Amino acid sequence: MKHRLILLALILISSIAALNVGNYPIDVWHTLITGIFAENNALPAAPEQQILFDIRMPRVLLALITGAALGLAGAAMQGLLRNPLAEPGIIGVSSGAALAAVIVLYFGFATWYSWLLPISAVTGSAIALFIVVAIAGLRASITTLILAGVAVSALLSGLIALALSMAPSPFAMQEISFWLMGSLANRDISQILLIAPFILVGAILAFATGRYLQALTLGEETATSMGFNGTVQRGKILIGSALLVGGAVAVTGVIGFVGLIVPHLLRPFVHGDPRRLLTSSMLAGALLVLWMDILVQVIPTTSELKVGVMATLIGGPFFLMLLIQHNISGSLWGSER
Figure 1 (cartoon, rainbow, N blue to C red):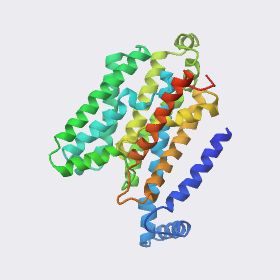
Figure 2 (cartoon, one colour):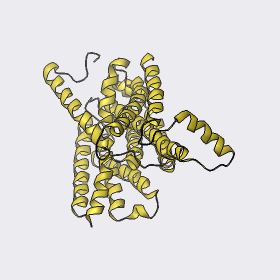
Figure 3 (cartoon, helix red, strand yellow):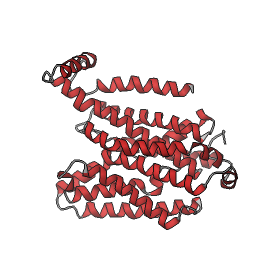
Figure 4 (tube, one colour):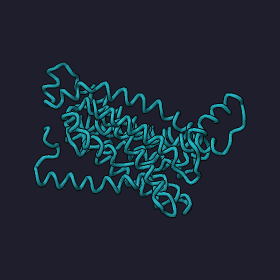
């Protein structure tokens, strides 16, 4: 419980700090107060108010929502698969969302209506999940489910590469490539409101399986003997993860490794309890993505780094560290297991 309060405090402090990050210096508190006063009195917004309310605030909110969704989905998948190296992408939902979004960008559909891109990404995530389940089946073993997810993910990644290689113009290929790198820049509140229902439903489904994940630590047979319907519970987790990841990818693009790093770091603080890990991972995921977004803005580069690139630079070495730990100790779970 104490670590959650610390995470909440860090989120609040980091959010305030993020509102102060940018090329144009503004007094956040003064701008916030005057902006509320101007809105109540129908006064025209000053440039500082537009920067704060239309650019920085949606970016901070999107970082928190996206990170929370990815962290929660990662904790749920690791609990379901009982594998600390698992993340939502292992069942192909990230690749499905990315492919659907790439198709919309490829054919220029995104220029018709702004909502087509996020809706298509969520739909792609759901289709990828359906294909994995159709191949493996909800009653299949964990190994079969993982193998089906890896196969589907590889196929979808190949189709994404095909779309890139056949892009009609260098500008289209650049747009697709930049989107795939993952970014929180230039997003607005309308896009956040569009994905919020999907992420909310996904979070409800994930939290509804908390007790099942606790029972699953004792084995599938034990969980079944305790009255849990494994097929239904597994379906909730898979659908919830697809909605969480699809909603996040829909607006930000692909931001990897969050669902892998966060649950693994927080597991010792909850003594390996997968139910308690859900909330902790949600908070830590929000904080991690917010920190990465602040970092890409303050690093002095000619053009702003992408959050997805930063996540890879952090997550890649972390993944290697886990493998080295496994080779040395023979266990990935740590001492609580």
